Length: 352
Image 1 (cartoon, rainbow, N blue to C red):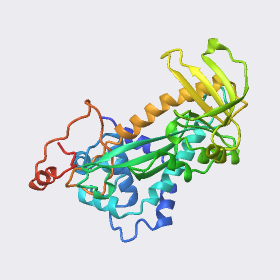
Image 2 (cartoon, helix red, strand yellow):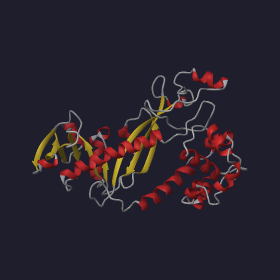
Image 3 (cartoon, helix red, strand yellow):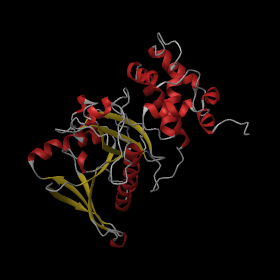
Image 4 (cartoon, helix red, strand yellow):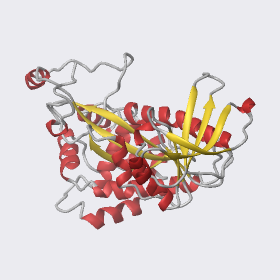
């Protein structure tokens, strides 16, 4: 019989309980809490996430099956799905937001020397957004389409370690580019984004605040070439131009010059056009920077959409999570109670 600590208990040693308790005290998280503490709640939800639990009932059944070992996991209270649901619904979310920011700072410090896909010493961020589908009958406030509910998750990732530094949740219909309105830019950093973030007036703020962006050119954008730089066609770079906008409205939105790089990917043979306000980096580095975002975008979307496994059934409350997409997604178990059967007949319910 093993006498050492469980794997989960060893993982939680890397989480500072004293820092967490300061976050709890800051917002009075345990006011009128008799037994089920905020730390117990955090451990239950962390265990559920790491072990792919699918509902509150699943969390309760799994933890109660090892009741004698819960003390060694750090959980002091009795676990019940109603208790977890009430805690998720009533306790201040800012406790866990502040604690998450502390964990992010710790993780970024560990990856500060992590090499990038290109040889750069500065900070490189990737911006991305993804839709998380919800059950309309459980989340009527998140209406997305007539029979669907969803929220949009905007994420800024540090490419050194693919660590999310900013996460913002908006309504599902919100445009990706609106994320730039609330973004605090870091001088000297490079932000990589797709064409959904192309808005000349918003992009000009990057130049005004000494930050850099790399994005794709949109169809229909008109440029006037000012100067050209020599390129090595063997690298895939087809052209490297300094350009200005043609239309009067575009010049008002972005009066400064821009750099346009045309590139042919050697693997897919796809022609790509990049737009940036960085005139110092080589053209091939601009292309490789954007290509590095492809891997991060796939990774971040898979992480956000597929690893958030704690999905609420209609009988549960207090959990907001996404469901997996695609033909490989697991089907839920059929509803058992009469209440679940009635709610499964409502439009937009995802329970199968």
